Image 1 (cartoon, rainbow, N blue to C red):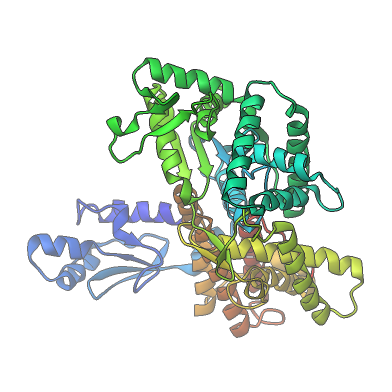
Image 2 (image 1 turned 180 degrees about the horizontal axis):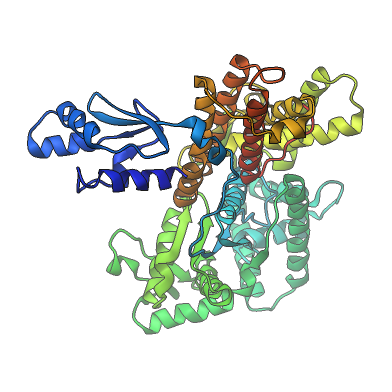
Amino acid sequence: MIQQIIKKLVKELKGEFPDIKEENFQFPGKFGDISCNICFIEAKKKGVNPMELSLKAIKKIKLIPEFKKIENKNGYINFHFNYEKLIPKILENYKIPSGKKENIMVEFSNPNPCKAMHIGNSRSTFIGDSLSRILKYCGNNVVEANYYNDLGKQVAKTVLAVDKYGLKKNKKIDHELAEIYAKLHAEGDKKDQDEFNSIAQKILCELENNTGKYKREWKEVVKMATTGFEETYKNSKIKFDIYFYESDFKEEGKKLSQKLLKQGYAFPHEGAVVINLEKEDPTIPNTIIIRSDGTGVYLTSDISLTIHKFKKYKLDKSIWVVGADQNNHFRQLFKILELLGCKWTKNCEHVNYGLITLKGSKMSSRSGEFILIDDLIEEINEKACKEVRKRNPDLDGEKILKITEKIGLGALKYDILKVERNKMVDFSPEKAIKFEGNTGPYIQYMVVRCNSILRNAETKVCRIKKDEPITQVNEHEKELMRKFLEFEEVLNRAARQLKPNLLCNYTFELATTFSKFYENCKVIGSYEEGFRLKLVEKTRDLLETCLDLLGIEVPEKM
């Protein structure tokens, strides 16, 4: 709606300012609902005072119906909404604009089968899930993909660890696999570790060549790990449309590597094949794509998988949600695809993110110092349960469990998503679960509060649909409606920049704006009850939509 209004303003001001663009308008404005800075730009060209220019301009501008008045302040041209007239449009449901929609694949989470999913995996998982939801909501066809590195050296080490220590199977299986993987890395001295590495590399070589005695054990390890992951995804309310396995793409990746060698883009070095990327771009380091023993690396499979993605799914765009420590990997991948003549390489995007720590310590699955997502969810649910019991002592255990699961998971997701993805997250369960401040539970509480108001409203349905004329709107009501109007631009920006934190910021601002409105404006029993109930309902609907786009459910009570 705002963009349409700004387009009208551009058309209206074009006669006075031929170079005016949509970028010259700001919403919310500095000194009005919408402000225009064109007088500063024109004044600089003409060597005049912008205030003089704006004073002359407002006398010539014809007021369009959406506005009540226009005024000059500090050189800005400021437009003030005719709220009474705009109310029906403001309260309308958001409609997805028509136009070309894209086929987009979002690959995210990608846990390694040698490791149970730890808090470090949560950032890729939650960002990827939220981005998929946002892109779908904007009308795109989105395929949510997960990629298991089931044929790497770390998996070979896990196979070795299972062979060496065995499995008791007395706990969640992916947790036990992670423990014995860490145990293998902690055992012995450097000589022992070198021997383990050598054996693991031999196991990997045999698996890739479909020889040796470990094939059955390898399949069992991968199956056990992914079964554990599926339980974690179920508890986290995460779903995928497709799963890819590295082992399915390794052979084709080797063939493509040999093709690069023949074309002169790669060269042999001590039995290995090295891609010569520095020749094409000095800022991208050369890297091995086939080891000296003939085994491939992660990049080898990624090359063939990416080609498969675009060919099979007819993609317009492919997105990878992977940590910033893999920036070089994706620069190498995209350059290799470019060398192979893949014209769609420009439509590949690596969505990176910073580390996540707990109490300031980076998680490591090798040392065993890691916090598992399953354990973290359990811990945060216990904290949520204490809060819910305190507020609702009469609720039975089953209801409390359902409520706390939504609050706990919502707290975890929101606290991770609200941080701009290029920054580090230092996660604190105690802060995340608070019912006040910029937290998931606070926003969930605002939705619960809205529902409570609507339930308590006498003859709710009749009053909400009643179309009594609104003759005057106060500042708190205006502020809330302005916040409604910001949703479309924030949503589009989050989709363009692939940043869910923008939606988190907006959701928190909407919740706090509503809280201020409710503190200052009586709803039930007021003269404006019907109109204000509509504002409550609109707030509830928008907050629910935003939380859903973040992958967060709303409990019945708090």
